[in-house]
Length: 150
Image 1 (cartoon, rainbow, N blue to C red):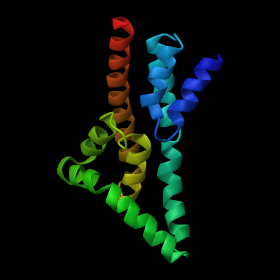
Image 2 (cartoon, rainbow, N blue to C red):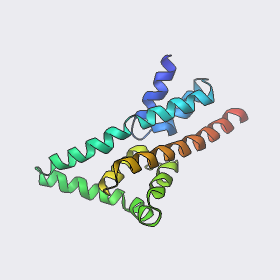
Image 3 (tube, helix red, strand yellow):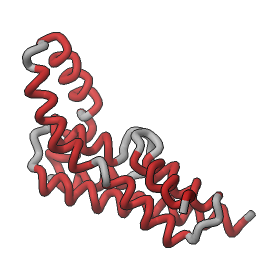
Image 4 (cartoon, one colour):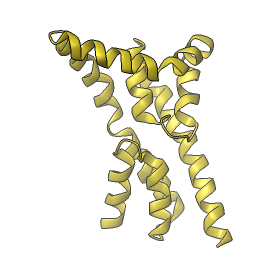
């Protein structure tokens, strides 16, 4: 049971997310289907809190103009590529952005960008959820390929 919690916690952390959790679970000899499910759950756990909490944080930081402006500039810089995809593809752009398993394109980044771009909660949550599924399937496929070839 300890291994399962480790997969969930790893998937819930920024940077590693399920891109780190799935190979970890596979390395611990857990069944791939179980690892995928636990990673999806773990990766989605923080998303609603980010989508809701980030709005409150940004409003609170308006009282601290320098920090607020710095955070907005940082977020706008990081979400520029996503903004172009959203303008072109709508919520599908967010889903694709999250679904591409590259550094800096996971659920955490997608949730932060959705807030900074002013996207609606439910459409963002659904787009991120399906993006996480896509990324999870891709990483699971890669992990299974590596596992069965070695």
